[in-house]
Image 1 (cartoon, one colour):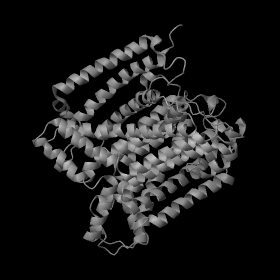
Image 2: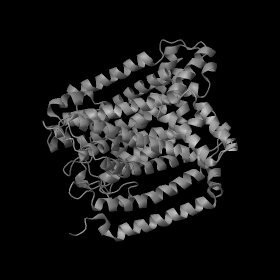
Image 3: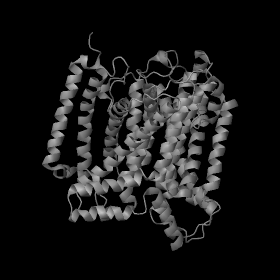
Image 4: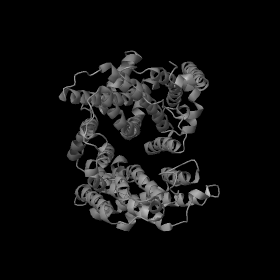
Length: 596
């Protein structure tokens, strides 16, 4: 029974395009890290295929394996109920342990297979003839094996155990997303602890990705040792790996349904479970509210439809239990960062508004892209997952109402999170007796410098979801965009002219205020806002409504869907993008401090 289930899961995923897309990503990104001469890691004296660099890259991809576990493992746990096959399957005399463990191992093998391409990509990159010979040392297979076995495999297994158990227990992908964000937040906390000498051992022990553990173990290694000495599984690294494997095992044993008899749910239990899921995803009147939004289309204006639909989408996201828990976690992380000693010393940050803003943007700059990845996927695909997409497609509501409401909901998520963090920072200032809050500085810095670029990223994420055959492919495409930005940074391509949504860093002083930075940021927002507008028009024209349709037919109809108004907006956006880009490029004074 166990082997049959395991083979079925393996065959199922080997027929999915997402497996091959992620496999190519996990091979070619490490390959490019080594093969591109401009890409530097660790320092000029470290070999690209040295022990430290090879291990560090694999530790980072251990973190990225979290997305694989969500895609393959959590999806496996929820597939029976999502496809309405649970009642049919559970009619058979199935052993719960064999069934659940078989499904877990089958999907986990897929994750391990994809991540096994990381060391292969690193090895292949080091063998390329164009790589600078001085940056490449002798090929040592033990470097690649140690990084894979000590970092990627335990991390992938831990995430698979945790996500599978939570998915089986709560039967909700949002619970899995929330756990992933919580793990990343915990990693941020351990990273802050690592800056304090007295807490470095604890940070190394508790880091779920073992990145801090790697830096702690190699902290006092010489350059020669970092190039030639393979890492050994002992000390704090061994304890870290065993601890998180144990945590994953406990979560799976407690929540994985091993002791629950597999049987079809009675109508009463099914109704009760559906009520619990609806309570987490939306208020009890969410569905009537959605239908009301569509029914109003026959009576009221499109504006009324849009307001009703926006209220529905916002209540399903911002007022859900998962979002409330996420907000509490973010506030907790912010307060912990503010109360920690500054840069590992004994002093703390002064409660000036600018320091509060830097802390907020520093934390959210890592978390917002992850939040956008998950929430855009859920919002775009929710109707189709709930089986009401065909009903919605038949209602007298225009695509612009449906599309706009979902985009507004994502933007509201960003604004609400920033507002809650600002409120927590103001409370922290008041607690320390600092009452010069500078609300205007909060508004301009967090909304204009922070929220606006992230909203543009949300538009891009929306477009990637619209053109993708499923939400996981869209998530991987957006993650690929984020990873490509990191690669550009490491390769020295730092110009903000080709870094979507970016502008020069925020600089503020009490003497000069924002100074020239405000003007520079405005030009960049015009530049990237025009491109985001074009992305928005494309996503609207390709919007997937009604029965499932491939991308090609929607592409053929895009000009008809956008109409004259959409064509005019797209043309204006292209002209503004070219004009503002040329102005920034040919007038360097826009990006520099004016004379005097």
